[in-house]
Length: 429
Image 1 (cartoon, rainbow, N blue to C red):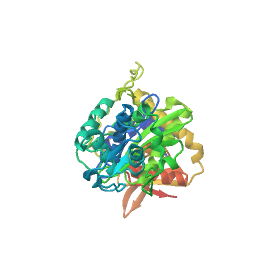
Image 2 (image 1 turned 180 degrees about the horizontal axis):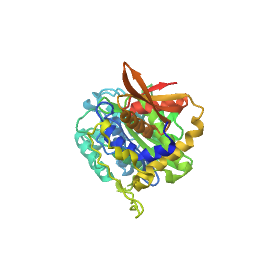
Image 3 (image 1 turned 180 degrees about the vertical axis):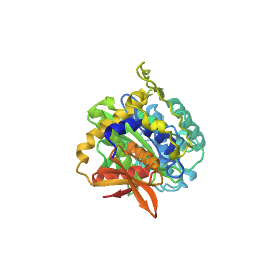
Image 4 (image 1 turned 90 degrees about the vertical axis):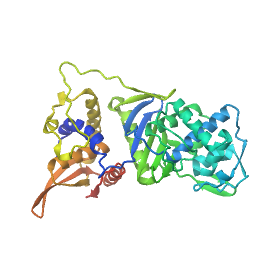
């Protein structure tokens, strides 16, 4: 079993492994991305592949709503304004609310239809009402994205239906989520709507985060096959508010569980001591710019070690010197992250002492591979003690890697988080 002190010393290795090895085609979920920000300061408190290109799916409708709210602010539309349904809008596939050509729908009805039902037919109605055609509205959406600082986003349609050129990033989506809340506080309450009725039919929300997760009071879900399960979430606990985005979930339930884990972990760290949170950058929510956090340079008594990690290196070829670094040689950026890891593990140690459940990461041919993969898993879920056991099968020596000392619910939640992020695991007692 690894000691806590050794885990702290090895924490920097987990960071590099996370970026370079978690994306291997064998184990990675190539669609996953996530980011968590402080809604008040714009500080980025967690990010994973936040700038990787992703399909927005129905998170697209948040921009459709942004432009609709803007039109209302400018007096072009009111809640009672009627919008005509074209043949194109009526032809949109599920999900929809069954609009027919030449029907009309009010803005008051359209807003919950977009949020609760994620109605594709309503999205086209709004696009044509504001832009003339959906193509022109797509240009308006993209122009607004640039204006908000969403530099990696291109919109081609108002609904998020599949289009290979309609791309975004988790960071851009969290900017849009924050700006919706800040720019249109009078309409934000719509994002917590759980059901609405249209022409005698009641539609229930896809967003279970609002019902099931403490402090969550809105935003939006999305799914197409190419994107996986996406969600943008805003949550307030006490006087703190977080806005978070998770993209590429393998299922709605595991996506929601992972989002809840990110929120719980970040709120807990903020409540305990803000210095334990690694702030990687700050988003200026007035213009959407992202600026790096200034870092103090290492003092004369410290020197940076820069191991030559190669993105396509094999797990068994990690340089041995990287495994033996002393605590004093770790750079300030890495020290901040390992301090968080050490703090979180210390907080949990009393709870884990009597636990008898574990998450099995796998069985490996080489000890170093088992160790490396265990560090990745430990870094991702911030729970459990790494245990590597030598086993013999068919006269072959293998190494089984587990994270032990977990409660049953903790183990199952951790395994679901790892699966969401592309790792295989097994819950064992």
